[in-house]
Amino acid sequence: MIGIVTFFNALNFGAVLQAYALQTYLEKQGYEVMLIKHNSIKQKKMRKSGIKNDETLFFEKHHSAIREFQKQLKIGHKSRQFFETVILGSDEIWNIRNLGCRPLPILYGLGINAGKVIAYAPSLGKTKYWQFVIFPYTIFGIKKLQSIGVRDSNTFDAISKLSKLSLEYVVDPTFLIDYSQILPPVEYSNYVLIYSYGLDENEKGIITKYAKGEEKIIISTGTYLEWADLNLTPSPFEWISLIKNADYFFTNTFHGTVFAIITNQQFISFGSHSDKVVDLLKSLGLIERNQNASDGYDQIFKFIKKSIKYEDVSPFLEEKVKNSKKFLNEALRR
Image (cartoon, rainbow, N blue to C red; front, side, top):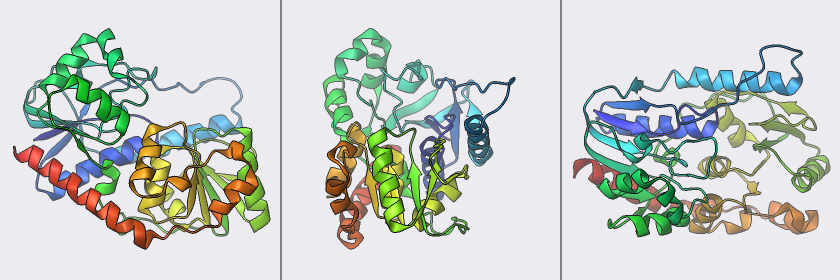
């Protein structure tokens, strides 16, 4: 039995899709898989009384769609079950600065009955290595790991100072599987899609000006935007379809950027604040897709109109995916 410790209980597309992808990939390799349940995420509780506004209703439907999708995940309790291997990751399971996440020992492989514990694509966010001193058990757990693959440079640099292992770069688990046969049809057309947790006025200005000039409607997912033409609460697979079929895609999140690339979509990522986004785009020769909205519409419009040639990107991505699968397969057999 392979156990996975990740943030599958978080109510966002990235969290559940990376858990689904890792589970699916491992099952296709012939492993029996279970996601290990834990309570490291503090979810915001919706108000149960009072008048519900459009934003409240949006998040109720959004969270409901993700909870329904979670039923496809094989989730169990840690209990005393023995696991042949436990995989830690991915996402920001080691981000001590994330106030929504407590640095639980289980996130570092402690208190688990397993033959070995490895890490696949964990991220520290903006946490620095010296901050682990606040929670010494995190360092103890990391030092006990038998293989570590990371997905961004900050994590690589920090963990290199905490572990004697030779680290490897790996892709986010959502890159490990093919989605083409499971995506539902889309009923919308002639639209610009947004995926964000919120946008500033500069980002809003860029998107609305572009959509108006191109005579496209604006669809928002992930968060409620009162200025969007439509605020949709799709299932995770429906969300991927919306990205794939959009006339253009704007995001400021890591997994929004990931699925833009997976679906070969034309996109702009307002992700300069994120090391993960910057590292991903640099590694694929797409760093110009990362834009700062404060640079103004005319500057960014140059890159909007410059199409991504995915035939040039694919060989780099395929090699990274191949190497990531090799790392994971060898770590499991070792």
